[in-house]
Image (tube, rainbow, N blue to C red; front, side):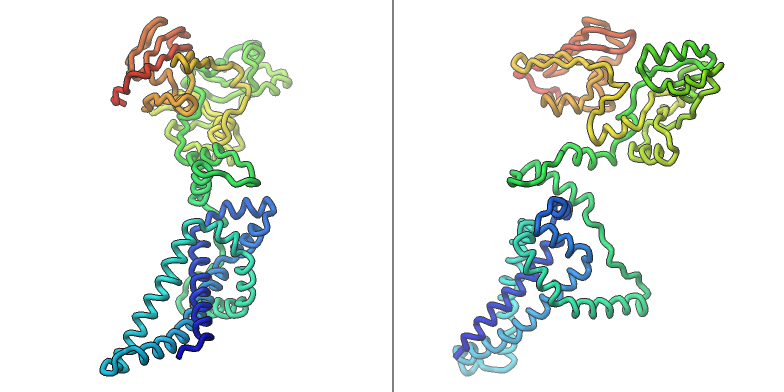
Length: 432
């Protein structure tokens, strides 16, 4: 006859095994950024989980020791229960000690794998952050109950690793990484945000993830829009340029715009210079292919805010400022270079758009879902030049299924404004 206390003890051991196995996978799969945000917003479970995550090796040690102790208890209890059942129901000729042992191992293994391994790990992995929120308090209690044993075993492990195996032992671990950030953004985009959850600008997080791929050419001010003066011009010309443009910095070149030698700040005019060279400040020269993240670090180390972008032939492609780089993360910043509003009039019902050719393809696709083709260009003007292969004239029409683009105005060789019509009945060419 099976003792009811043994049944209760068996269920308790299986429950404990399931708890520790689930907690382990939950902490491994949980979004650490969400936990950090909960702690910052004074959520009780978030504060507990952040405290536990300060020492991840101790936390993992707690779950491991708890699981092992529960498994030992389970093995002790299940062995007695199965022995009693096999003695009662197994035919007498088959009641051999080796056979009973094999059956005990097989049945006990199947039970523990299903109820205390696969099932809890699967359930906890589905929504790890939610499970951790619910079980934060019991986890904290068990953490401190097993704390002496964990510290003892960790100290022994550290001694073996450092003294015998000559390995470095560290308990440090980042709170969250890029994977956590990416998971957090996807969760916010595709799932309903719970009431009371903190407001988060998802676009900034998304831009931060993409920032490591951004090249300088994607955030620079093109050469055609650069205001500059020749170094041998009178100081009065520089002063007039400051007044007419409203810029605080003016680039200075020698002989040709392809030979930019520095820039002048408007405050330097108070020094009453006799020559432009007297107030010249150096600029950095960077290639188009340079990563924006590398340039951002370079701005900091060199204590500069302006860089000249050069192409593969050494000519000037444009300029980039620290504000341009920051805009790749936080979005548009209204500064001195953004004084001119870009043409942007949309008539969705008519599938018609009046646009500046300086608008970026990504911006138009994201805002109006136009699905304009992408390529080795950043702007709408770049797309038109790529299709035509020549400089257009006002009135020229560019056919690019399902788009019809009409050139409205030009500024010498630069496209200013266009009219874009998207025929809803046509499909894209699929060329790009």
